[in-house]
Length: 168
Ligand SMILES: [Zn+2]
Picture 1 (spheres, protein in one colour):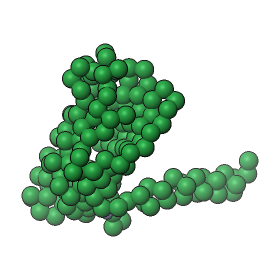
Picture 2 (cartoon, helix red, strand yellow):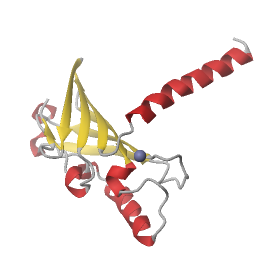
Picture 3 (cartoon, protein in one colour):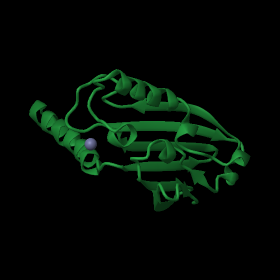
Picture 4 (cartoon, protein in one colour):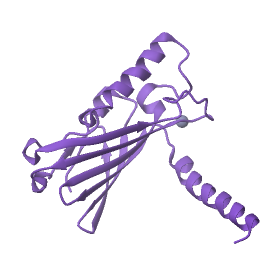
């Protein structure tokens, strides 16, 4: 492969990756991909920071800095975002909360939260309902486009703040 071709391919790929993210950015609305693979439940949540903090620029006041730090702290525990049935006996394995804002990067006009979490569940059959408590703490959030994947089957749903739960 020539150098030029490699470069154009890289640019093409980065455009391909960048465009959908930008197109999806709609205030108040987020997306969640939830995958159950054996006893491991994995999620990828994307949400405009505006819905979570009320602003998408770097903090300008002490109150905004506090709000952003508080959000980062809360997200260390995935139960802040998602509620699982107790009977499923799930234990959090890892979480990763990423955003330009957390890194202090002065982005474009918009900023997203990209949140990944992973649980190991002793009784995954009991995962029959998921709750989303974050809607209560972040009233600007009103919708979550959810994609559920388990044992090769897929299901799509829209979860709204008025009824913040999902049953596969
Ligand atoms: Zn925005």
